Length: 76
Picture 1 (spheres, rainbow, N blue to C red):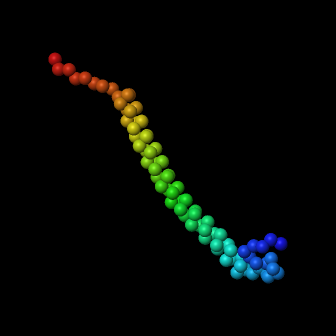
Picture 2: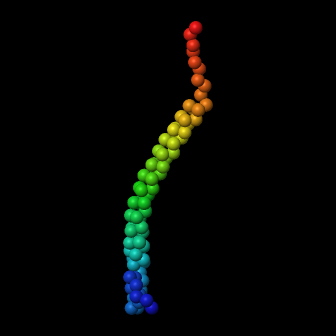
């Protein structure tokens, strides 16, 4: 049998506490990493959203200038 963190390789029984402690250790470290990644993802999504809104505004403004009619008023 392979030696691991649970015990059991030397004939000890694996208890419920052993399993819950190990799961808490694994989930705790994964939870910290997931929290850091989620905050980075929110920041990236906000930046992309702001960029899309700015691009839509600028392209719409450009298109509006191209399609608008110019009226000249000449006094006689």
